[in-house]
Image (cartoon, rainbow, N blue to C red; front, top):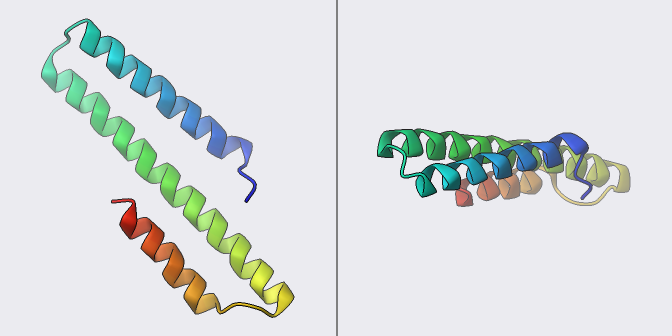
Length: 87
């Protein structure tokens, strides 16, 4: 699968968030502030997972239709399973 620039940029932003959280921990910032930032990073990761899974699903269904192969229903089930496993 090809990952677009937007998906890569999402991951880079998350990486920056995590570095910021580590810096906060090293500076012994308040627990509530650290948890708030960790929660924000988790939300960003969850959204990125959703974007990647949905993009992959669209691509897989399109290819299956073009090639006359695969069952779109099975592809959807597989995508849902990926989302469930990510939580």
